[in-house]
Amino acid sequence: MYVCLCNGVTDREVKESIQQGATTLRELYQELNVGSQCGKCCQCAKKILNNELLQIAETQVQVA
Image (cartoon, rainbow, N blue to C red; front, top):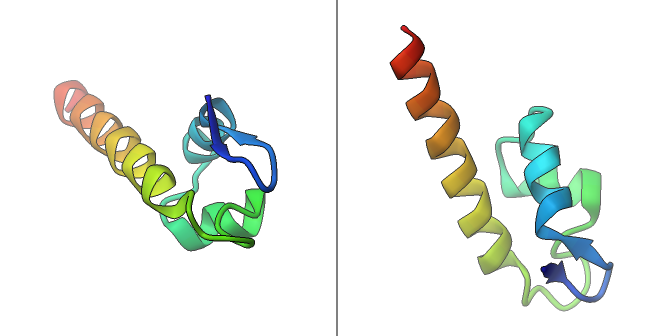
């Protein structure tokens, strides 16, 4: 699914960026240019970011 139509960024690319260490919308912007044009994608990108970070945190708690 496309998250950012202006820059052709998909949810898969956003998730990969998060798995590689991105933890903020600013980092996604720097790496993928999410939100650099019209800004309509920011809400969706933030939702994906929050969900992925939550999953990462839950996995780390289960391991510990």
